[in-house]
Image (cartoon, rainbow, N blue to C red; front, side, top):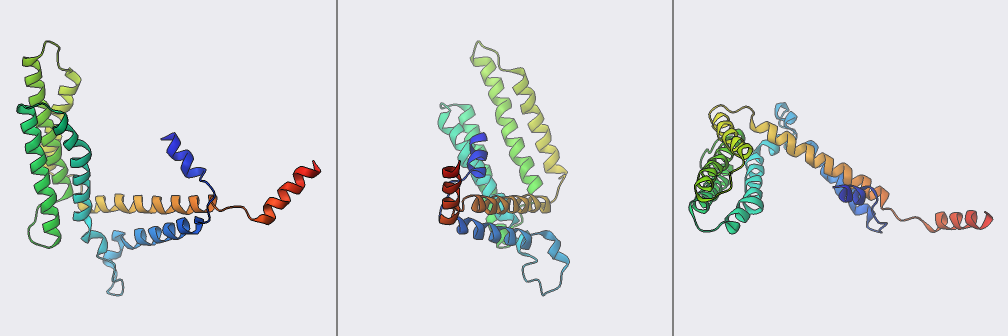
Length: 213
């Protein structure tokens, strides 16, 4: 994390510094246009519904990242058994949810809100971990970590609660997405300014000062 932050705050000089600035400005403009505050505006704001219309695609992208970066590795690393079957079932369920988000985008079906989907994902992961604790306890001499079993039970409970009684609406997901876009835009602009190469005049002035010293 420190290395990433250092590279962002100390970029190498490049003649393409202006591209970072342009992309940063475009990202900030896009983030402002996607804000939910435009929903109450008149028809002159043609972009007022853009934000809420892409929430399902944001949820779908998050599910796909979770499937590819986490669950798929779990499936590949597991040996054949009950836990691997349960993990595959979890993968299939969340894949269907992601597909449902895409279909909902085209008003084909209504799959529910982001909070309910998060609850379903937590419940699936918690159930798999509870079964893993059970089979681990019966098939190994070493004890399953109690703290991880407690986390699995908490995941199941929280998943059921979020699925039955959502705590937040989809607009929260949109605000988080907008904040990330604005932050990315600011970082790009700052990186572009810092990566601007020094002009020949500046270099010659520095060389003169060093010679005089």
